Length: 290
Image (cartoon, rainbow, N blue to C red; front, side, top):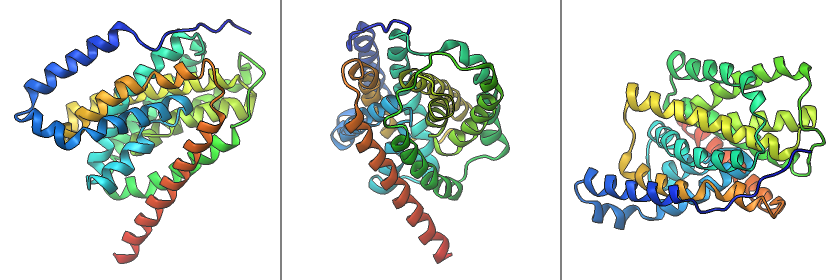
């Protein structure tokens, strides 16, 4: 068993990035005080989403997209774009924690990144996400992610390295995960982590660490693509979720140093199941009306 490195939650970079955020926020918006008074609760939503995303590898989109659609009345495509730019920060913050703990099997990146990128390109450029597609897919994917979290709840895993026979299946799983994430912002991390745990018994923390790193890379790629090629990101909302995930992203790997987080993961699984059910029913209702 490889040694696990302990790390502190706070790092000077958190303070540096927070100050940078403050400068950009104060200079980039015409009325920052009014905006802050209206949207500050999104900072807490960002912390929650990042915590969930980095302790389970589900991704903060499991929180951001439903909140944006049902509470802030944002259209599904804009909510998806917000999830991408927010996860790019939050999952990267969490990924740095898992990497510092030494629990990311870096050797597996060469078997996951190529098809992850391919899947992302397919779902972004060939089958561009549309509002109804997002609604139809998000519910079932969220529900499946909740079930996978419950199924893997007690899986600790007994091996630290996947066998050679896992490479081809891992390529395919990463391809599917990349496509799904391009449509609903979640999927890559949880699918890969669950596959490694259930199919081959890979250590749970290493599986989740790998999933978090992959979703971080996926979110960064998708954020850049949508900023450069498509636009339409609701920055007046994303600014606050980004600040929240900056501080919440490291909570998952940090707290898991001392606790199994079994109860917490059960709560998150219930959230994912409820999200999936609510969004699926709402999508079915819209289809019925049309």
